[in-house]
Image (tube, rainbow, N blue to C red):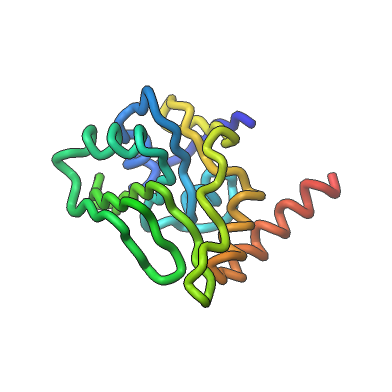
Length: 163
């Protein structure tokens, strides 16, 4: 799917448009920014980028002056990653997550990194930005216990099937 996003740009969208161009790796926008780019009524405060090893290196290198931290084996409890790079671009936190997985209550991985070869392409600031598809986002929200967001996505997906 290819979609164009227009209108005034909030800070997160400006930051997204100014990310370094990734030439060799695979990556995609996830989290609330993914929902917003798909047209859902959310107001992202940050950018979550799911990446492979090559894209992590390219993005972190391109954002060198904006990187606040670069952690191996990062764990938030419900989500963990092999590597997490945190950068701040236009006042927006950009989380670059490599080898990310959703974690269940017993500490086991319940959902691995979504397939970065199957993404939607959404035009932002004249660039084709890879974005996780809504079905992948629904699985991630369900796995991390974010029932409100999972229900929001399910409603949109159900409406799309009914058309």
